[in-house]
Picture 1: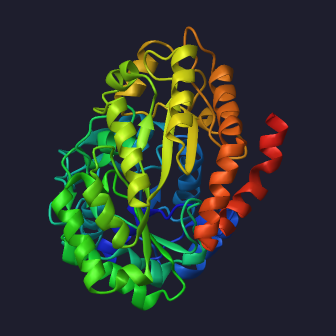
Picture 2: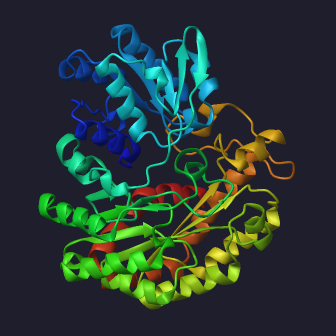
Length: 456
């Protein structure tokens, strides 16, 4: 259960600007629609602005709930945010006349400026970054500039402390409880499937200063005595080596490395020396997007990495004593049954601490979506991106591989990976080194053993 980080930062910016905030994260509680409405009735006095976070598979449900809000609060301005309306603003607005606007791309300052307009009696449809319904027409304003001084943003941890219960959120690979933060936005890589750089924050990596980042670590240590982990949600935290090293040095100087562990996404060009100081500074897990065991597919999806880089990276991580959670994906341009097996064999060879295998989910706004949609490879609609229970579904139907085969491969890959005697012994050995890891491994195994053995 992830924190709704983008919505948190936007709400925190508005609160910093003097606005009263009511923040409801219904899935985390969880709350149904009526319970959510009742909280709004009790806590929101004459609400003027509703900001609804959305996703592709839930978009119609999100719109339906917003329609309920508009019926109950007809004078309120209702806007949608997130990757889906950012990628398809006109299509999203066309679904319902109850939606006043959608925000495109990074929306912190868009939401703040809409709130200012409503407060001051100005026209919110003049705000940059909005696609808005005005005089019966849908208009799109110029883009809002990306935020360059990220030190201006409030700490997510402060907002979480005031408005949320940190015990409602967890990340399976990390220690519990944990706090999630951004230390930068944007990603310099151009992977064709990655939705956030292509629809939200772009490819220019904008950074918080090391001092600002470590100040938030200090805030977490001082204000969340039970929190054991900081999850750095940057697409690629390690893109700027000098900055990573400085953050690590400051964490060590302040002794925060002894108080908090942390994990991050880390591209496979990370070097051994940086891994070592990250480990010393409290990092225990890195998460690379390995994706495929086929170099041709890595080239096709513009990954910008090589199999040799991947192998060296994993070897260095083991030398540095870092855990690795490897991400693999099938169904990309050029995929065959043979390349899928190449991916699994690479996973066996790398033998990382944990691994995930999923079919490609081509989200609107990405090059992968344009490729799949243009070739007629997507079956079903947005709601089909997940199953009824909320787990990931497969909407790809490739000429040579069916969606069922993609799902079956991923299911079998997890079973073949996790039920290996070598892997089980590896987890036991890791657990002897870290009781916390052993506890987490046993809990995870208890949760999925029926699934694994059923598949077997």
